[in-house]
Length: 295
Image (cartoon, rainbow, N blue to C red; front, side, top):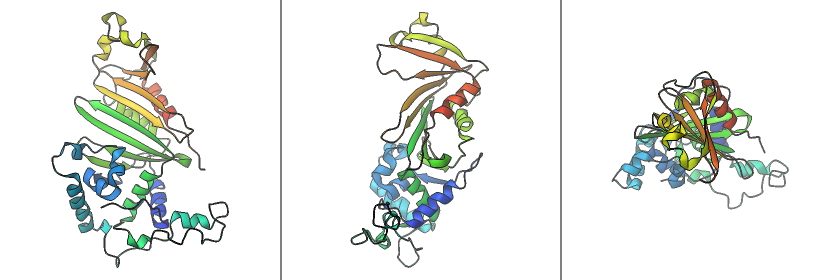
């Protein structure tokens, strides 16, 4: 059971209300499981961020998703029947028809014939959940930090919006998706604490290695022993719109330092590994957040 990819005025209002709640120390706004997201957003809704619990389960994912949605209904977070629903308002496409240059003639009537009937949605979500799903489907750019500690992998997907809007989705190894809304100003230091959980980064920057990638593990490289002490490995990647730049950096936190390595395009060229100070780690993350504007 999934909600159609259709944005209404109610969805958009819920999304804007969420972004308006941004905080330097944001609480967890909502937590959903792999099964709940699959039930509400379909396969595409979990494909980008992953579904570790579903992937490790022997049970049929669709059956688990159906049970999860039933639980949401029982808790009042989703409504199936038509009588208890809030008005959805117009679809986003219909609203744009009222704006000259928004895709219609300004009459507000273009595209209404044959438009999807929002009252026929299988599920109407709680306003906050509806806003979250809308934000997940409509970012201007994306940023992801995936870190591995021992054998456990955790990922943080950041949905980026104009005017500094950010939505975090922290996916833990047991398949829980925790949503928070940090401010743009507080985000870099907040995410640096995920990368360097033990506070190993020092006070100075220095070049640790420059040379061929294939010699990185060579005992004579001067860096192999230090990297062997890696306690947490983080891959930071970004993706903008069609014309935006992308970035991928590997960050390695050891017992006494944090190193950064740009992902080389091939194994033939030289690569550089830098030891980062705590402030440089924050600045690197800050510079990596895609800059977007309203279009």
